[in-house]
Length: 127
Picture 1 (spheres, rainbow, N blue to C red):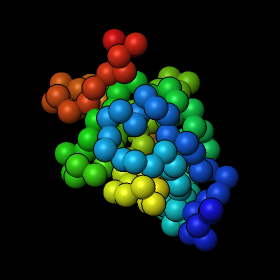
Picture 2: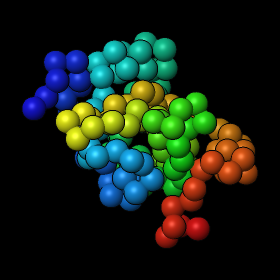
Picture 3: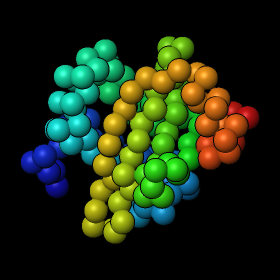
Picture 4: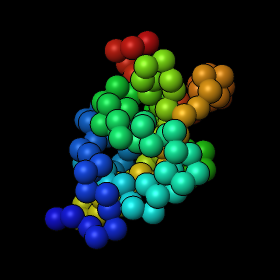
């Protein structure tokens, strides 16, 4: 089942390695059209990274529940030497889906700062 408000080609299955950090019962991640349009309008260079969402999720290096809300998972990944952050609103029920809130590039110093603050965890096999 697809939603009329999602960008269907960007739909992803959440990797098991990420699900262990959340309470979400859903394995599905959808990208709302409004989020895609917002990134495209405000940060057009980040659309390239959004198109590679599956790689970002599969190759994550750091993850943590956002300090802005426990129902949000922040995923940090480095592709081609560029750090990207995806923020995902986690599904609260089996019937719901996980929803991408935003995705953008971040400076490495911001990633390191969040690791030092203690709310990001390194991927176990990459420590």
